Each structure stands twice: as C-alpha cells, then as structure tokens.
Length: 111
Length: 117
Image (tube, rainbow over all chains, first blue to last red; front, side, top):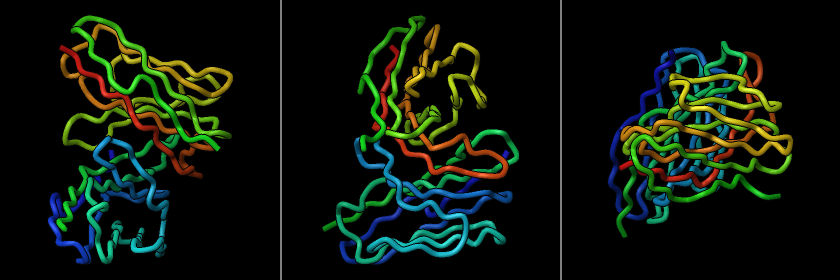
C-alpha cells in the first residue's frame, strides 16, 4: 500500500516563528488532507488539497502531486498551534475512500 | 449544522470483554469510516460504511465489526478484547464514499479512548 512520510517528526518553536512541515507519499494520490490534532485527540481539518496552493489565515498548504509531496506552512506561530499535524492521502484504486495517514509532526510552540 | 459526535468519551474494559462504540455523522453525510489510533501513531483505517453496508475494510480481524443505521449513525463493535486494542477510536463522516475516481473530505469526531486491562 501507499506510504506516507512526514518530516520533521518533532519541531520546537518560539512564538512568532515560521515553520514548514513536509509530507511525502510513495504513489499517486487522488487527494490529500492536513489535520491538526489537539491535546484532547480531536482531528481538526486544515486543508483538503489535491494540488496547488490554499491559504487560510496564518496557514497555507501546497501540494505538488506530480512530485508526490505536500507542504504545510505556519506563519507567526502561536502557542495554540501546538499539537500534532497529520497529513493523510486518498490513494484511489479502490471502491471506497480510505485515508492513509503519516506518523505526524509534533509541534511545540513556546511563549 | 452539527458535527460528528462519538460516545462514550472514555471506556475501560477487561481483556476478553466486548465493547460497542457509537458515532453520529455530521448532518447531511451518508458515509462513516472508523479509524484506530494507537499512542504515538497516525490513525489506521478499520472500515467504512455506506448505505448500511460495509464498503471497505483495512487490515483488522473479524472481531472488529460494525453497523450503520438508516439515519447514518454507526457502531463499532470489538469482541474478545486484547490489550493491544487500547487506543483512541475515531469516527469520520463524509458526503460520499470516495474511491478511485472521486474523493470526499472526511470530518472526524472527538474520539473514544478505550483502555483494555
């Protein structure tokens, strides 16, 4: 099956810093989602992005499907951005939409 | 519009017991998918339900089973619980099943944390 790798595994920032999280995938995908998992376990949808670039406030994402990667940019980070960020892909080739997740990037933002 | 809800939030069971977890899909969504998230890992796909039938399954044994009801809510049942079943169980709903030619964004509930002792 498809493999999804996220980097870095851990990231520690000071409030106000910018960061880039990367997601590589081993095969072509139909679509891709980025999530933020808060300390209580809730997965919050950030982006649904098969290709191109999208922006939402301080966050933006770019997916280059032909090169099999996606990037999540966080600008002017805040302590509330702390948590785990997951990339998940829809690999297609089946009759159902299954998300395959990476292992996540643990982000800690210090005040 | 209500989001995805799950119950209970926490559960403690003994090895060998059976457990039922519940999920109500987001308003207007007809498809429910279940995922298991072990500590420190990304969620793993268990199965998906559409029109009250299992529509796809991940690498989980038959003691993991489910139901979907006419109102699109769903249950996950796990029999003969093992210690390794301790995890966060996440339910996701979507407008459709997705698949080879079309995908639908999935929205997750808050999860049920299951501890097996």
